[in-house]
Amino acid sequence: MKAIVTGHTQGLGAAIACELMSRGIAVLGLSRGTSTTLAQRFPALLHQVSIDLSGNDALAAWLAGGELDRYCANAGTALLVNNAGTVQPVGSLPLQDTLAVAQAVTLNVAAPLVLSAAVAAAGGVRQRRILHVSSGAGSKAYPGWSVYCATKAALDHHARAAMLDAVPGLLVCSLAPGVIDTAMQAQIRATPEDRFPKRQRFLQMHANGELLAPADCAKRLVDYLLADKFGREPVADLRN
Image (cartoon, rainbow, N blue to C red):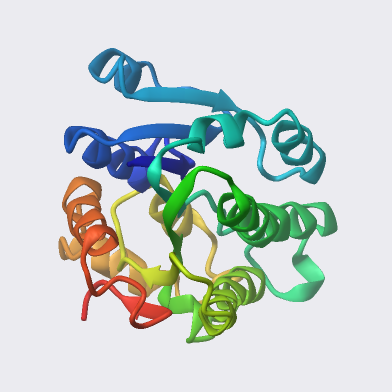
């Protein structure tokens, strides 16, 4: 069994990678940077690729090089965790930087869909499980989050449609993990209320200690990813 985790160097992604490797599962980490901490702790299990997933050209070039196919060869089971994402740009439509919109859609939607197709087509793999890290924002609209909400909704619907294809040995789920104490949450709390009117709610959750620890969330997420029930529902919430 081998796993691919995007955005593995910090926050939930780092916790997921750590949890997988703690269970003896090799991880291919795809992120803009690398993790010295994970590399030192799991030297035999971690392979890292520095890649900016907010640009289509970099991902296309990397896939064309065949590294993903070589990594997946004879894996038996391949796990893909599409974790990398951004909440930016935040604000109403007139306030959104157009380049930031394009980068967010590429990182949050295009990269997961491209990697999903690549893993699904990789040779030498009998079973494939693809997990999109989604959000409650995929089903509930928030002012100032039109891009973030739309991209998470796209992942949810991608999972629904992919499961209708009924490809043998392929399971897909778009999973909302809950509100986690990560750098993204810090960004949200630092956003002015004129750009994100719901800011106070997230400040209150943080003050009340309601945010999940990344390690605790990662353990439950990996349990779910490996469970027999994975894929029965194409869209799920880890809190349920």
